[in-house]
Image (cartoon, rainbow, N blue to C red; front, side, top):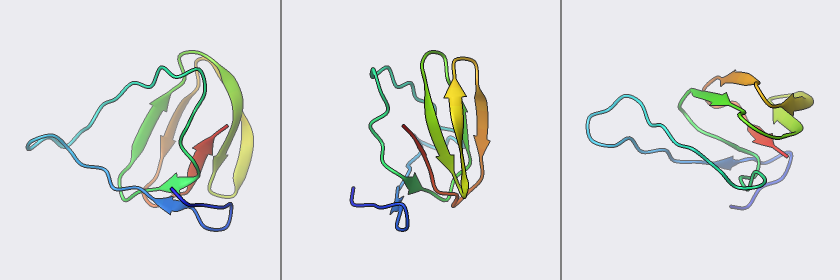
Length: 79
């Protein structure tokens, strides 16, 4: 996925069957997704870890227990 801070990548998200929701769990030791955006809302719970998050024009820390709701077409990444 090519990207930069000024040019986030567009991510296509598909839903299984006729579902309105897609759930997933990432258990990597670190986030591997680059700065990206998509037309769907995203609800993310950090169950372990810490670092920096970029959401739109905001940059801040994240840690275990954070719950983040991201709007559609809003560039974001966790580092």
